[in-house]
Length: 276
Image (tube, rainbow, N blue to C red; front, side, top):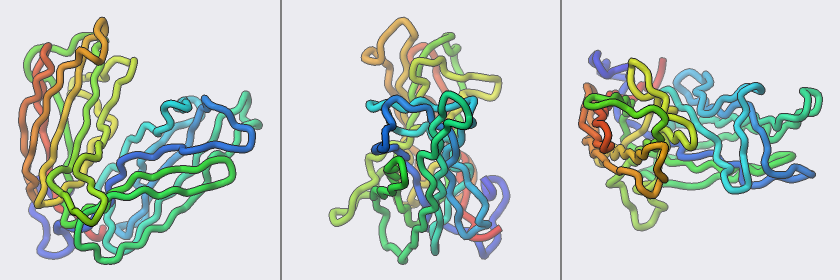
């Protein structure tokens, strides 16, 4: 949101190529490991803006994520700003399997993966498979050209959120199709999936796990909700969606209807800086 409310300089900030992380999945495990596994550690991206860690996943040993054979995707929490992909970048993966005690913890993944960019003319999607000692990690990534940064906020504006109700919030960067390249048009970016837990709601609104989405200026941002009460199943969920046209600054807003309440979705737009 660096240039959402303040004008950008004439140099150093514009729509540019960025990295969209759709998912990070532990594709396979080996050397005696068996599902389920309790995982902690970090996944982060480093770009040429400042080479600092832009955290995508983070869990401590006392707050592990349990991965099963059926659900191997890490619960992502970032990035906190656009990951610039003008030249080269790195994705850092350090994952540990929690053992009965700390001395029996095992390194699941220990990787630094470089990615180079070759002046791409269009947005595309691809998978990267990276193998380390005990696992193979699958990175589902998108190169988004001519993109701006969208930061998403959701708050209840009419009615109230029933205690214990469940929901899934997701975003899609749509309207970007190429016949000769894998499309990102229908790749889901999970903003929040409460699962069997209640949706985190506070005075500031609904606490999304992820907020930052990269959108090509010639495309659209689609924000969706799927909500259901705790006594019901997901099959009976109420669904709604909104479409936003990308901007270089300022904010856009609209209403999602979950049946038992209405929610205001606000998207803060910003150009992407290429340096600090």
